Every structure is written in C-alpha cells, then in structure tokens.
Image (tube, rainbow over all chains, first blue to last red; front, side, top):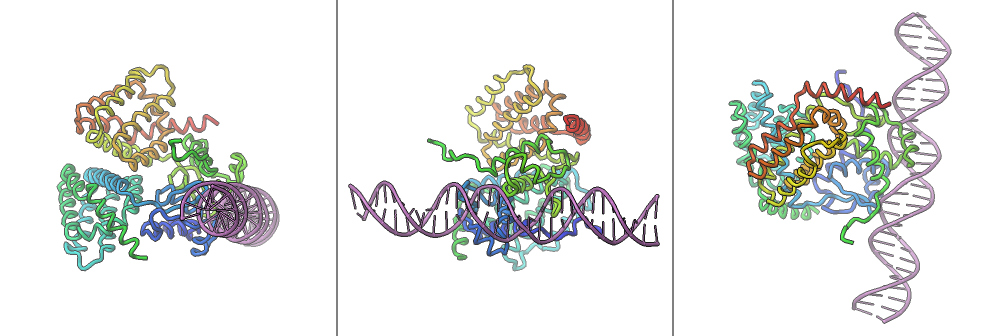
Length: 225
Length: 225
DNA sequence: GAATACTGAACTGTATACAGTAAAAAACAA
DNA sequence: TTGTTTTTTACTGTATACAGTTCAGTATTC
C-alpha cells in the first residue's frame, strides 16, 4: 500500500462530488432554488451532510446562498463568464511561462507525445470528449508549472465555464489541436514570450463572442428538459 | 434604503468570519485538530451551523478535513507559501496590466491621492497597520482591473499569507510605499510592461527568503501562547 | 520489556425533531 | 377586478440525540 489515503469517500465528499457535477452541467437551472428535503431524499442522505456539501459548493461559487431562503444554482452571466475566461487566460499564460523555466526536456517531450496520440484530427469525437481532451492538455501543462495553488484555482475556473465550453467547442474543434501543437513547439524552443502570446490568443474571448455562446447555452439547458 | 442586502448576518456567516479570522492569525496552531464541541461552546452555537462554516473554510483551504478525524488548521509549508506568493505575483501583474488598459485618468488619480494621504513615511505604524494599508492599495488596484473573480481569489491568497506578511513587513517597511509610487507612475504613463515588471519585483520572493520568514512566523505563533 | 489485544472515554457522523421564517393561498375590502 | 390582510403551507435554521469511530490508556501475552 503506497497510497496514503486508501479510505473510502465520506458521505459529505460523495454528496459534494455528485452535486458539483449537477451544478457544472446545469442539471439545476440557472438561479433555481434547491429544495434540501427533496434533494436529500433523491440522493439518499439526510439534510445535515447535504447542507455541509452545499456550503462547500457555495465557497467554490457553484451555488449561492441567501439567508432564510436557502441554496440556489449560480447564474450564467455574460460578464462573469468573460471575467472567468480572462482569468483562465491569465492563469494559463503564467503557467506556460513557468513551464518554460521549470520543465525538463522529458516533460515537454511527454506533452508532445500526448498531442501525437490524440492526433491532429478530431477523430469523430463529441464536443464533450474534445473538451475533456483539451482539459487534459491544459492540466498537464499546469502540472509542469509546479504550482498547485494555481492549478487548483484553474480547475475551479474550468469547471465553472465547462458547460459553456461544450457549446464553444463546436465552433473551434478543428483549430484547437493545431494551436496546442504551436504552443508545445514554442515550449520546446523555450520561447516564453511566444508561448505566452500563443496561449493568450488560444484562450481569449471577446465579450460579444461570450454573449452569443451563452444564448446558445441557455437554449441547450432548457431544451434538455 | 439603497442597499439590497440590509439583512443581518446568518449564524453560519458569523461563525465563518470568526473562525476565518482565527485561522488567519493562527489562533489555531498549524496542524492543530479542532474540537467541534469545545469550539461550538466557546462561540455560543451548536455543532450543526459550526460544521457548515468549517466546511466552507475547508473549501477555501484555511482548514483541512480528514474523514473520521474532523477538522484541522492548515500547515505553514514553505513550498505552499512560495506558490502562494508566486500566485499573488501573477494575479497582481495581470491586474496592473488590465488596469493600464481599463482605468480612467480619475481612477489612477485617486490611487495616487491615496498614496499621498498615507505619506512616504510609515508614521510610526505597526506592521499590522502597514500590511492593512498595503492590502488596501493592492485591493484598490485590483478593483480598477474590473475582474471580480481574480479579485476574490487574490483576497483568499492574501488572507492565507497574511500572518506571514506581518513578519515580512518589518523588514520591508521603508521600501513599500516608494515602490507603490513607482507603480502608480508607470500606470499614469500607461506603460504596462514597466508597471508589470515593477509589480513583479515588488511582490516576488525567493524560496529561501520565505523559509527564513516562516521560521520567524513559527516562533511568533508559539510565543504568543 | 516489547508487542499486541482489550476497554473505555472522547469525539465525530448523521438522522431527526421542532422552532422560526418566507412564500403561497385564501379571504376580504374597495 | 385589483389591492390588502390573514391564514396556511412549505421549507429553512439549529439543537440534540445517538450511533459509529478513533485514540489513549490498561491489561495481557510472549
């Protein structure tokens, strides 16, 4: 036993993960009030651990809380999404610069190999799968920067814009892989400025692009039901 | 009544704020186990709302949680502090660049005025007061960048290194104000690259500096008791 | 004496009860 | 009808009880 945490997930952790997934995929509608009794029954738990999980998700901005009225799903506000994209760009640009300084040749080689495996074409993948693949690439890069704190916050930012990226990926599916390749090339050349510029261009979105994609997101959220 | 939230703080919010302060100032010793019954009694509440507050603080990394063993105060690890300083630098450099693009002349003017008021000298202030003043400056700058998400995360990062900065401020008290002035000058000249470089130099710490200051922090934490 | 098994105290994990509050429904007045 | 008050209902807020687990201290065995 080399792992130091073989312990089963606590009930709060379990609820936390379940509800987080539901919030990410907008199984709760934006702004929807969450009925504790009903949700607890549905997830087979009582209100006490449920509320503990919900409080964690409030701290992570997946839910909001109003005194006396309970918990609500977050909204999908264009301005907030814009700021999250801007934030994501800042984090990834910083990560790619740090990676230029810190990563070994083998590290970069492994990243290039990952891109080769997943191929330049989308191979008939769904946008869900493409977003996952995209996330893995960015997470690998983040890991190479060796800053866990930034990595953790990036995970949170990504989770909060994930639904939105499913929509976005449809429009960008052919470009993504090629842009990743360019970034890794710059990384191998240890050209931090170029890598940073490419990353920024890869991620940055204008507010009007975001607003348009949010409209599309809304229709998907409410079509599903 | 112009404000839309005149409501009193909920009990969970109240506990959350109290315990957060205790965690920031290491009133709980690093790694110390938190006794729920005892803490609930001390704060005049029952375990249910207390645990909800504690769960929020786990999500914000002020506390850790172990299944079956409860809640613990965070540790003071040099590597983690280093990563938080690096993170802080990334956030502030990004903020100062965004401010260069977004802020109005009046905004920058107001920031300069704030520096004038608080004077180039430390005026016999304690390091607690100086850190607070320093924080206000950086928060104002962050506000001008108009990104609430980054601002919120910066607040969290600052809170987590706050105790450490009290120690650090003693060594730097004469330099801080002058460096702030240089940054605002660059801002007024709209020189984003210079402002970014100055900010990075203002914040960045080497791992060995951090390790040394953490030793000092430990002695303060355990001297107090 | 060291390692192991046992036992009890202390503490956490969760269900539940009930009080308090907000929202919805009903009753009433204009 | 429309607006206002009252009543009812539903849901949240919190205390508490008790079950389950951890941990320390003691006894037991080799």
